[in-house]
Image (tube, rainbow, N blue to C red; front, side):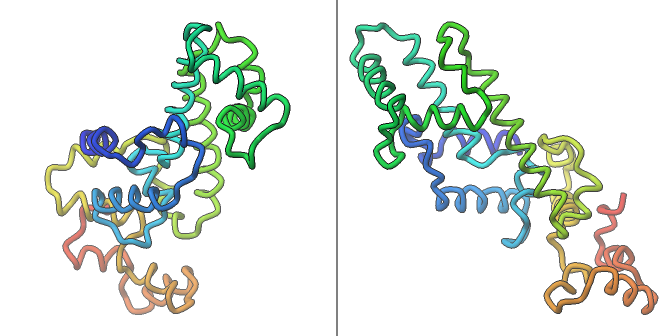
Length: 236
C-alpha cells in the first residue's frame, strides 16, 4: 500500500507546478485523490474521508504535497543569489504583500505569509538563515491532525473507528495480511463501510442503539451476522 501511494504521488500530474498555485484548494483534484484511496481499500464511495485518510496515513493533497511544495520553493528563493531574477521578483512581490497589496488574495507572497500565519509561524520569515522545511512540514501535519481529531470525535459513523485508530499512520495490516479478501473485510469493518444493520439503519432513520436492541431481540448480533458471511477475520 505504501508503495502504491508513493507511486501515485510521484507519477501523478495533479500537482504539477503546485509550488506556484498550491494555495488553491482544487476540490476536483481531491475528489480524484479520494477515489484512488477508496479503490486501494475497496470501500464504498460514502466512506468518511477522515477515516479514509487516517487508515492510509495520508493528508489531503493541499496539505501533503502542494503547501509543502510552496514552502520548499519559498525557502529555495530565500537562499538564492540576491541578483537572480527570481529572487528580485520575489522581493518585489513580498514588498507588495507587506503593504497589503493582495490582488484579490491571489498574490503568491501574500499566500505564503497567510499560510505561515495560519500555522502560527508568523515570525519565521523574519529570520531567513533559520528557516528549514522540516519544522514547517511538521507543523502542517500537526495542524491537520488536530483538525482531524475534532472531526473524528464528532462523527457518529466513525464511532467504531475511534476504538481502533490510535496513531495517524499507515495501518500495518494493509501490508501484512496476505489474503486480500480478509484485508478488505477488515478495512470495511474498521471504516464502517459494510452492509450490517447497524449501518443500514441510518438510511431508515433508525437510531444505532435501537438497531442494536432489535438485532439482539431477533437472537442475532451484528457480529454474528458478520461471521455468517464468512468475515470473522474482522472480529479478531
